[in-house]
Length: 110
Image 1 (tube, rainbow, N blue to C red):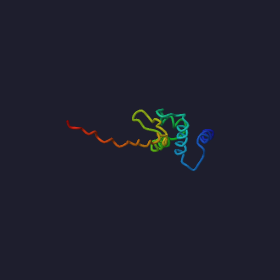
Image 2: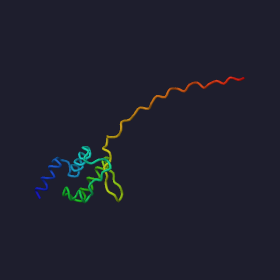
Image 3: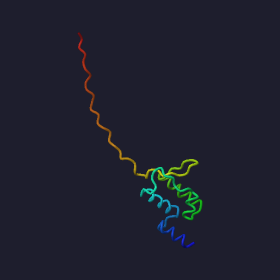
Image 4: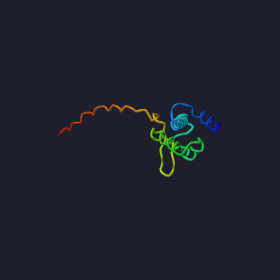
C-alpha cells in the first residue's frame, strides 16, 4: 500500500490542497501539455478510481472541478471530454473601420 501512495505522490506532489484538487491539477497539466487534446475522452470515473486508487467521490469531484473550470465537458451517456484549455481562445480582433458612404449621385432632369 505504501508503494501505491508513493507512486501517487510522484504524480501529484504533496501540498496542503485536497487530493481531488491535486489530481485535477495533474489533469490540467496533462491537457496544457497537449498529452490530452480537445475532443479526447477523459478517463472514466472507474478508470480514475483504479488508476489513482481513490474513492468514487474523489474521482467524481476531480471531474467536477475540471468541468467547473472549463477544462472538460460532460456529455450525457458518453463521459467527459477535453475542451480547449481556458485562455486558449483566439485573440479578439478589432472591428475594421468602415469609411463613410459617398454622397448619392444626383440625377439630372432632361
